[in-house]
Length: 467
Image (tube, rainbow, N blue to C red; front, top):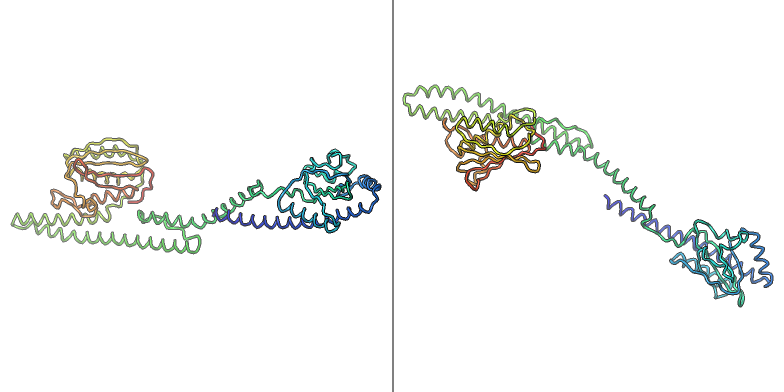
């Protein structure tokens, strides 16, 4: 946008400058031609006068005043400090010299420009500023502009020169053109800022609905119950918002239908499981009875795990500042009572999270560490606004190719699901879901010194979505 505006301004200034210069040259051509014919007439008039009458006529002209020329007759050509250059001067000098040469049939025509303060007008080299006001020199002085004065000297006769000084009516034809003059620079900046401000306003008004759509799309992945979009703005954006709201409703309905389906399946399965357990208890063979009961326990755990994976993550609570140090210490004390050994080190400031959800996340991680490693060390730290909890256990670790797989539901590397080992492989998946809902994540890695290292990462500034 800036490059386009600047290019347009440069192009417009180029065209405008060329037109102004062409107009100025055309004006100077006309003015200089008229001036040359007037000087030729003056020269013819003085040629026709007797020599003794020339000074009388000059005195009368000076006494009358109001003339556009300052005329004098001198014994020699007066030296003039010629100034100026460029096409403007070439047009004036060429026109005056050509017309005077043609009109007067003479070759010795001197055409020059001078500043008023250095201009001398008589044989004794009297300055223009030193002449008495009644001689009409005020017609050549336009203070404070001080425009250049055109001086033409022609030879009337041997040792006699006609001296004519006049103004062209152009304030300063030798001032040149400055691209970066203060006025043009200010005008360019004002135009640039105005165009940018209006463009920014228009773009913002058009993209604001798109920004809302982008935020809603990010929130949809974490919270299906987020409020619907405003169906306003440009026609295309409004149509997109309508389609987005319809998609959100359909996804929410499908998720709710999935929850109802699993609830119905769980309810329907509980009755035959209970009936089968009663029949198993009536078996005479103790070994068969034990095997049947173990299988039914496994089936019951699978049903409970399915429900937990669908509905167990929906902990609707308000985020609030939570002391992770105290929460971790509380969970460690509870695990010590169950025979586990957990050490807590480090300190972080309270973090805004959903307390119950975060407690469940930490409990799953710590229970997993104690179950497989008997001992665990928890380290809390914060760097650059990111809180990290490192949980290092003393267990056998996890094969490298299984590190990502253990987060999947119902995946357990310990294959037993008896009533002694318990669990259905949902703990790590639920913990990672809670961490990601808080804008963080959980990663697993085998520690170089042995055991598994689980790292919970939580940003301090994040939007907590519904779980």
